[in-house]
Length: 172
Image 1 (tube, helix red, strand yellow):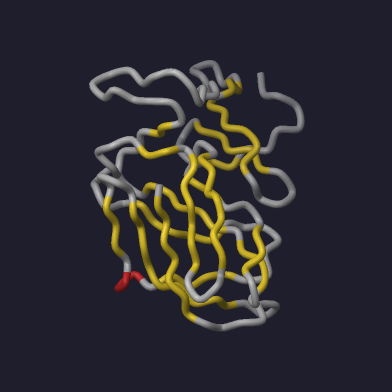
Image 2: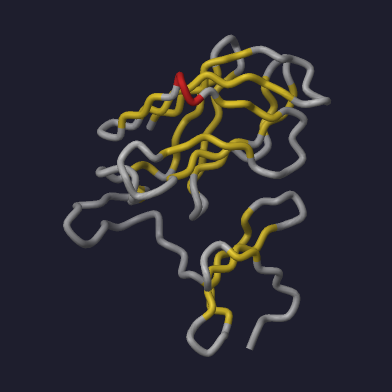
């Protein structure tokens, strides 16, 4: 039985991503063998991990980094753009809607693409931001042991008041 009013976007054959009007993920569910919509359990931010890793409070295991990564990261934008927390939401780390000094608003995500090391990727979320960021794949670098992800990005968009290129760096 499907829950009434739940809109699912196909992400894998049975995974459903529910989003609010701003495009933010509000719930993750999956369809069981009988077609029932079952919520994905929320992982606690305390305690320790299981398996071969030691795990610790607020850590996230992703397939594209050998080590666990903190659930809260920090994004810094060069040129006085500011520093913003990026919070784990089950799909990646997101800034949410934040104002960048002298430019406008952005809503960025750092997510794991694929299962090989080096697969953390920046992207724009679909929301009400005034600026999008065009990321430069040539300037991209990543280190997982003590997480550092860095790339150049250019602010774009009709309502964006700057068109400058800045360095976007995420650290733990």
